[in-house]
Length: 81
Image 1 (cartoon, rainbow, N blue to C red):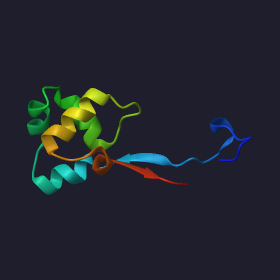
Image 2 (cartoon, one colour; image 1 turned 90 degrees about the vertical axis):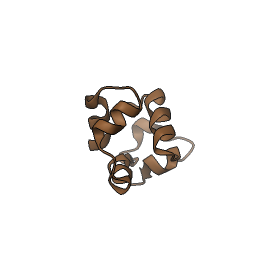
Image 3 (spheres, rainbow, N blue to C red; image 1 turned 45 degrees about the vertical axis):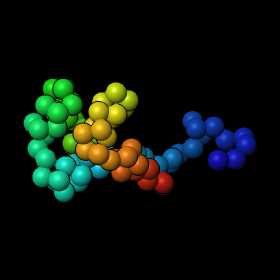
Image 4 (cartoon, rainbow, N blue to C red; image 1 turned 120 degrees about the horizontal axis):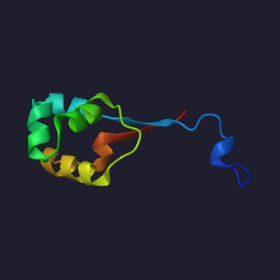
């Protein structure tokens, strides 16, 4: 980004993708198992699993990382334009 550009003037800035479904599938963990392990509702985990979130709850993210024994970088991937 140049000095005179703002985030609003950039047409394409990339996106963040979630890899929770891939990590869970690799480990053979179901959404119900993860929901129970992190003490939250199935619907919350299902949204994360489908990548259908627009704002990240850092508490949920920390719980997922703890239970899945992974780092944030393994769950969230920045895709440049």
